[in-house]
Length: 359
Image 1 (cartoon, one colour):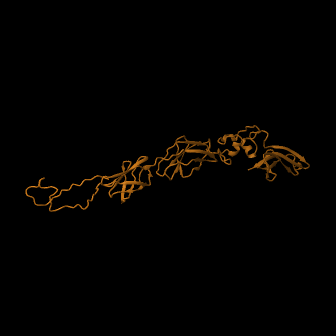
Image 2 (cartoon, helix red, strand yellow):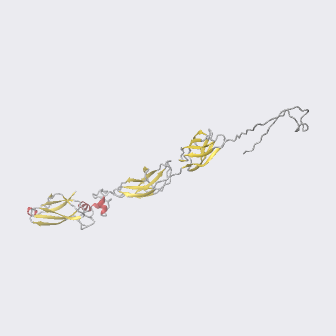
Image 3 (cartoon, rainbow, N blue to C red):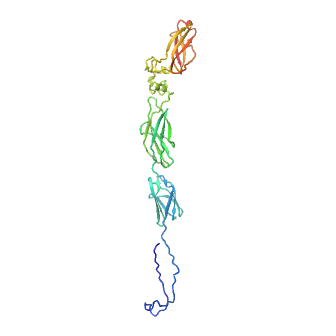
């Protein structure tokens, strides 16, 4: 529906007396020839505008390098492409409906995609390509103390896949170093509890998206690992479990020689005996020696789970000799055990007894 005009310059042949004039050329004049216009062909030489219909993929990394395919119409060989005002690379004319290219580096967010044909026509797709922002991540959400370690946990981040997580560890707040990278949502970290004092560890977890973007959160959590109850952290001869169970310090080796309940036995001795170092009523000692005919029965306070042996000597300055087999103490807690020394009442005028804990 575009208006157009036809201008025809016609030469009319004939024989006239004098120059043609209004007086001798009129509707009754017979011309010796005529012109017939059969048809008029009209051409529109305005270039066709290109159209962008879609871009796949329509998102990528800010560093660029994403291969894209632009679909549409009226593309010309030699067309160029810009994304967010920056020229795309490796532009290839596939056909009038398809172009391919590689995205340039750009800032995060939606960017207009423009196709420029060599004939100066162009097409724009507003926010046709989105450069991914850094991943969204809430950071470390939980830390649970474990025996000589800790379990860290967090919720999934959102962003360009694949998403991974960098775990940072340190012994000073916000001075952590990279420890490991995982694609899971939790991890167990082995930790040394310390020897002379407990060590506090600090952790930060950050997410990394498929573009290499880091969320840079500084959510921090700290933890002191639990002690292995069977180990001896301070090397004083007593297990961590025994010390913690009786209110002793598993990081202080000097408390092995202490006697908090004043029963004459050190904490270390009570540990070997299996008695309570804070309870004076639970010492490891001989309770009574009673004669039964020619025999002597020795009774002593013991502790379950230990092995005892009865030793005797007739010389106060001499050495002791085992007179019993190993006696395994059964049951629970502190109890009383006895051993019958057959014929002891007539064998010697003096006998000294002692009970030894067998390691």
